[in-house]
Length: 196
Image 1 (tube, rainbow, N blue to C red):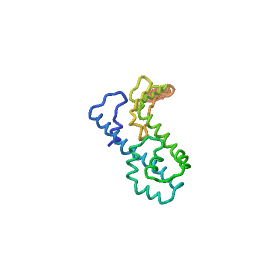
Image 2 (cartoon, one colour):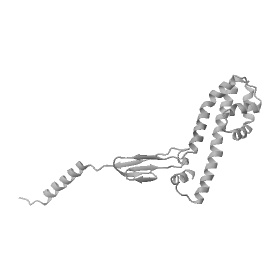
Image 3 (cartoon, rainbow, N blue to C red):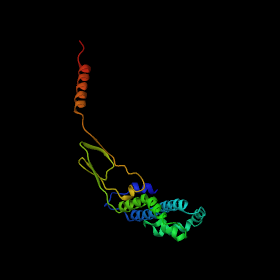
Image 4 (cartoon, rainbow, N blue to C red):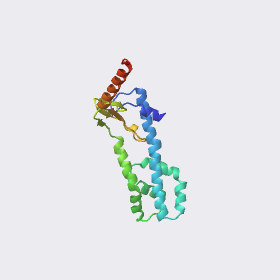
């Protein structure tokens, strides 16, 4: 249902009904609360477990598992902070040496760069224009101006699934037209000529 709603959303800057605006706000909240928070928690938890496994006694992994729901709430509250996993370990009182900080930094580098990129991308307004050399025959663009196809998708259209922009064009093949006319004329002549 959400995917169908996202597909029918108009381009950025176009008016949408109040009902659609409300549904879009609810969808953004759902994405933020359910998907983003859960993904951040799972990755932070995996980073924390990897560092604990490397630098602490195995019993601390049981502590992590025992307090998983509390960790979720903590991580949800502190999301976006680059030292999130390290702070969660300190909150649980897991004794980790100073060398663990390097591992936290290394394991979190990819996560932190993706979070930074997605935060930047979420606030953007996007426009893509493609000019084709011939007449456009089909496109899913938001608007067309001559041989220029323009897309202005809302972020929701490509944040959590692929967004494919399509434009097809065609040029009239004059050689094929001339050959077809010649064949039609020859066929007509053969058909209507008087038998000898």
